[in-house]
Image (cartoon, rainbow, N blue to C red; front, side, top):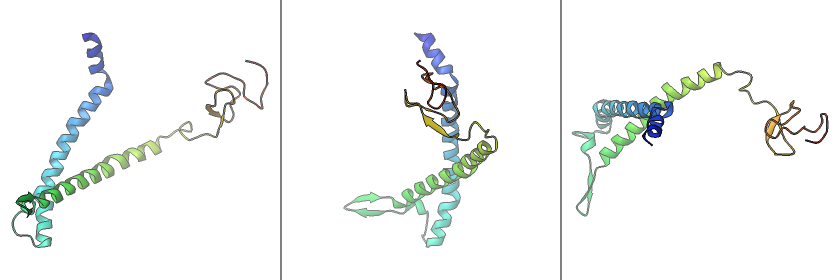
Length: 141
């Protein structure tokens, strides 16, 4: 029982996911600190807010609503998403496009009449059920 759990933990996917979560948390902390230290005060200066922008709130019926903290969190989220998109997603997509092979490009396909799987147009037999495809040599399976 413990050996199965050990194999599960040592699989590449679990370790990669754990590393990604830790790095993501650290990255979010850095972006949050940058936003709080530079962007939020800059927004406060632009809108003419006195004091810290994150300290702004309004009250309704004695309940405090910290709208400045919400705006700060929205900026952290937006900035994190933009950095991930422009510095991770776009470069990875470019690399995948650059190293794509002809096999990666979608070849014209047709359906197998027996199992309804998608097979390449030039195939004479279905890769899934091995039946002969129409238009080629006919015969029973």
